[in-house]
Image 1 (cartoon, rainbow, N blue to C red):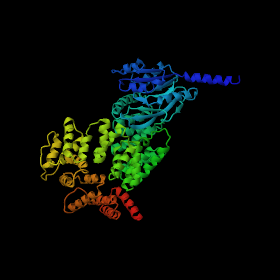
Image 2 (tube, rainbow, N blue to C red):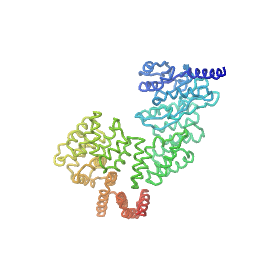
Image 3 (cartoon, helix red, strand yellow):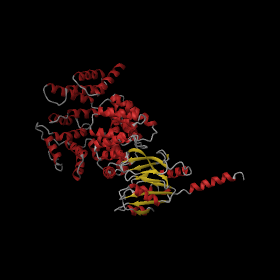
Image 4 (cartoon, rainbow, N blue to C red):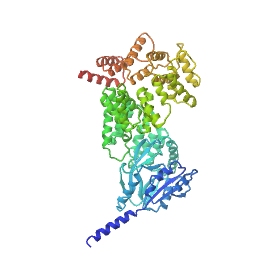
Length: 640
C-alpha cells in the first residue's frame, strides 16, 4: 500500500498529459499556394485544424477541407486581430498553434512542439512557447531569424490585439513564455521574400496610416512603419520612423535592434558617406555590444572603403560573438557567416596568405555551398594544381550524388573555363542526371571547339530573349571562330545591339567606340581571357584604346582576378608609355604605379612592389588600400 499514492499521482499525470488537446488555427485569403504546406507541417499532432477564410477567390478553402480542416467564412473588417480572435473562439483545444498561411514548421519539428506542450502543460506559470522564426526567400535562403509566439494556451484572457501587426497578449497579467531554441522548434516564413515583400509592405502601410489617422497608433507601430517604407525603398521615411521608435523608448522583445538596423541599411542604400555611416555604427555598437550584427556592418563598411586590416578585425569579432550569441535580438551574422568567412578569406588572399585564404573560402562554402564568389576564389588558389587534386577538393565539399551540387559545379566551371574539370563534371551531369543543357556548349568552348560551341549557343540565343551571360558567351564564341575575322556570315539571328558590336569588331576602322558597348566588350573579355590564344586575345585587347570611355582599369581588374599578374604588369607598362607620349588613357599616373605595385606584390616581388607603392603615394594615390599594401609589403621585407 505504501506505493499506491505515488503511483496514483503518476497515473493521473500521465492521463492528463496524454489528454492535452491541440487546435491548429490559421486565417487565410487566396493562399492556395501555401495553405497545404502550412497545415501539413503540423496536422499530425493536432486534434483539429480551424481555417478562417476571409474572402478567398481561389481554392484555399477547398484545399484546407481536403486536408481535414474545419473551414469558416469570415467577412474581412481590415483587422487581423479580430479575424484571429474569431478563430480562437472556435478552437476547442487546450493549446493553440496559430501559424500564418505562409508559415510552416521545419520538417519533423511539430513533434517537438507536442513534446514541449506536454512538458509545460501542468506548469501554469507558462502561457506560451516562444521559438525562432526564419524569414526566407522562395528558394529557401534564410534572410534572418526573429522570435515569435505561435504556440500558446487556449484561455479567454489570451487574445490578439491591433488591427495590423497583431500580437498575442494576456489581459489580466504579463504573458510568460517558455523559450525553445531553433534546433528543436523552427518556423519558416516566406511572407517577406523579395518576390512578395513589396505588395505586403504596401498593404501594411495602408493599414498603419489608417491607424495613425484614427489616433490608434501605439509607439511601437513606428518600427513597422519604418519596415514598410524600407521595403518600398523610401529610405528617408524608413529612417524617420525608425528614429521615432527609438526616441519613444518602447521595448519590443526580440525586435529592439530592428529600427537601428533599418537606419544603417537605409543610410547605405541611400548612398550616405560611409564615414558618416561608420560613426552611426559605432554609436549602435555601444547600444548592442554583444550582438554581432553591427560588427558585421562595420566590417562591411570598412571593406568597401578598402580599409582591409581594420575590416578583418571587425569580421573576426563578429565571428567570435556569433559563436557565443544566445540573445533573442535579430543577429544578421548568423545568416551571413558564409559572406563573413569569404571576406576574411579574400583579405588573406590579398595579403598573399594563401593557406588561410584557402581555409576561409572552404568555410564559406561549408556554410553556403553554392556561393560563387567563394568558389571562384578557391578555384583560383588551386587553378594550376593537378586535375585529380582539384577533383578531390571539390568532391569533399560537394556531393556528386546531389543533382543541385552537380548543376552548380557545371555552371561555375563553365564560367571559369577549366576544360578538364568541366569535362569531368559534365560527364556526371549528362550520364547520371540525363541533363542536356548548355553545359556541353561551354565544354566545347573551353576545349577550343568554338565553331561547334557557337552553333549550340546560337540555337538557344535565337529561341529566347537572351540574358547578359548568354549574349556574351555567344558573342565570344562567334569572335573566336577560326574563320570569324575573315568571313562575316555569322551575324544572322543576333539582336540589333549585338550585331552592331560584331560589325564594329569585324570591320573596325579606328573610329571611337561608343560607351554603350563597354559592358559587352568587358563581358566578352571575361569569357575569352582564359581560352583564347595570344594572337586572338591581343587582337581583341587592341580595341580597348578606341573606347570613348576608357576600359583599361576594368581590363586590369579582370587580369588580376584571373591571376594574370605578369600580363597586368605589362599592360600597366604599356599604358604608362603611351600616356607619357600624350595619349589619354583616362587613368592617373599614380593609379598605374599602384597597379604595377599590386602586380609585383601578387608576384611576391616585394622590393619592386615597395618601390611602385612609394611612387604611387608620391604621385598622389590616396585610396585606402595603398596603406594596407605598403604595411603588408614592409612586413614581408622584414621577414626576408
